[in-house]
Length: 626
Image (cartoon, rainbow, N blue to C red):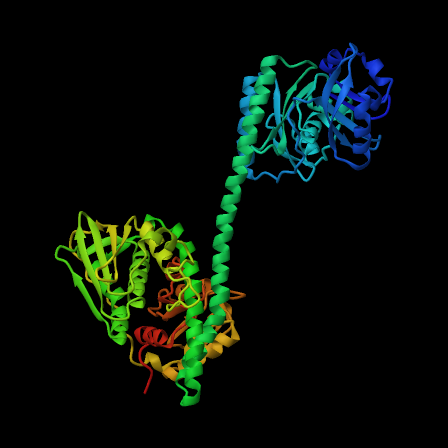
């Protein structure tokens, strides 16, 4: 290779191999501009590239025996004028794309690689430098003095900046045998002497696609040339480093993406459920307004709100279910759980004039380990589809147990399913009827979410068409049964009769939602006071008595979790217990557990239904005075 300014006398680097290939001495080559050494047919191409680009071209350099040496040339501007890097055309192409700064986990891997390289080359020191936005980013230099690493970190690379800067800039290995007398190192010679560096052999490393990520350098304490074995090791170490950096960054990006997704979902849940709470709450209160003229409009408003909530909840749950693990399992009463899921659909069947049956086979375990959330979503969605797509006839639910698996079969007499499109229908937002005249509304998330929940349970789903019409769905879920004496269910403490006469403290920072909650409470017969945040709630609880607290979780100044913890600490030793019910827009599966860990008694997610609020208050506060 050669590195020189275009004009005469402008050589910066000239390798011995290049001199031997062309047959001219350095003095001879230095006496003429670079263009004069080229085949006349290539000079115009070089001239055009200097003026308007491209920055790369291929030229033929004259040799002393009358032949030529084919070169790949890279052009760059510099304070000394246009500069050229030339190497044999067979050499690899060069990439000058910037890389992103390395993360700490990547740096840890680079330090291990540097140590291994130093063990393979006793007496030498290794440095790994990354590049971002045209500047060095310190990757690893475990044996180099800290002042040296600090001086290099952040320094701009360039066409003639040390061994590593030059190697990264041009994307080629740079071998400097004598740092003290090499022009590439002139700006850093004092720094190198202080660090005890005599020679530096640098090799760039790349991604699989050829993007230059940085350079790996091996330093000798005295001026010397590397052996062939050392060069082979340097090249292999550089390849390994490129793979390590690329994979490490991909893993870091994945971790950041997972964290960002969780934060996004939590924020999206809160921001969307908050206005929905007001929307559905207003609908609930308006339904009791004695005005026949408004009822149709109110019903449409409520239905639109419910549809929006179903869409949002489906997307949220579809993303959430993929992160659930075996730690989500709990001990459940199988028959009671299935009946609880089935009962709402039984009423819907009666409203549509359908026959609904639910049977339990003998031998069904009483209790089992199961992810109740995923099971409830899967079974509920399958039952919803069966009822939705059946206009006449029946819907049957059969629950059995065989070969250590819970076997649930749902049979309907509806329109059936296109089994040839089953894989397609399991994709999100895909529906069986995609025409503009479809009879059944929906978002195409039900089967997808049911399938993902089934996978989370470690189970399988099978679909078949009934005869003469309808669909049969079989859900099989492996169970870990529970043996031994079944403990009695915990009994809720009795609610003092006089408690409901006291006001309820509503802790909510959103004024619109405060108004909605207040109207609901008044219609239900309860009185209420308000606090804007957790700190105000503590002050109010210290001044007055309340029958209970409806506590928002995400608020300024002090959130609901911390306020609850401090209320529980203040109650210790006093024999008092103030019922605290979370009313929050944080609606992911783990949010309820977080509320309970903070000391809250129960959990209501926004949007709040009036009947849910009534049930919760009657359980913990008691019925209001008539």
